[in-house]
Image (cartoon, rainbow, N blue to C red; front, side, top):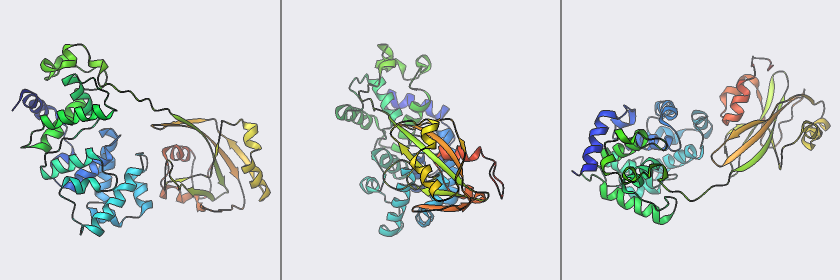
Length: 355
């Protein structure tokens, strides 16, 4: 066993966290855990994992789920395409693979929403196959340890890191090795201000020896954040309100929201009051604007949403295309983006009124 692996394993035996998916070799549970933890911290993802596998203990129960029920369980976790892809992949396993989770890397990789990282994690941890897992933590650790200065968001950089990861992989116990590397990157070789002096790998770490820890890994691409302006209209009477379901290839697909108008730029209060949407409501009958909130700023990975909520009283609600009228007491049944959920949670709801 080389020095890297020996030191890594000694550290992992002492410091690894007790997490439910580490005590199983069930490929379904490993798949669910790795999917939930994509772009999600463990402290946030753990309760979602527990609820998810309690409701869907196997691939068959997940395949049978309705989209609305699945989205409700996923509500608040974000990156909702993960849930949609899990659902599609579960149906594929049930319908085309006799309900048996695939046991080889290539077939796992072909499942909807499964990339190289997740396929390697499931293949190595569940089936002992020699595929190195490479996530952001592993990229950071290996770039620092080997002094890799090639940008990790380029094809050459990815090839170099992948080759190093495969070279280091413990082929007798690839699942344990992968979990140890990921845990070390998450807890010890952290992005900012790592405790290099206490790191068991630092004697052989190129970045530490050459004072390059803060410079690695190298990234070149800067993703421009898209800024969007949303007006959400809470159309309500004493007992009911209007919801609409998001469709199309955009954020929050299949989640529910209040009727939305997107504008090219932020509008003033006066511009909102004379907006064609409100004028059309007035033409349908009584429409009283009760409140226009201050702007809310909601940050997504590559988008910034600037939103305002407009509460409008209508005695006779008109659902319209892709919209439905629900009782206010039914609000908790539906899955919403966090921005909508937080707004609704601030409103006091009883059986008859929202004040």
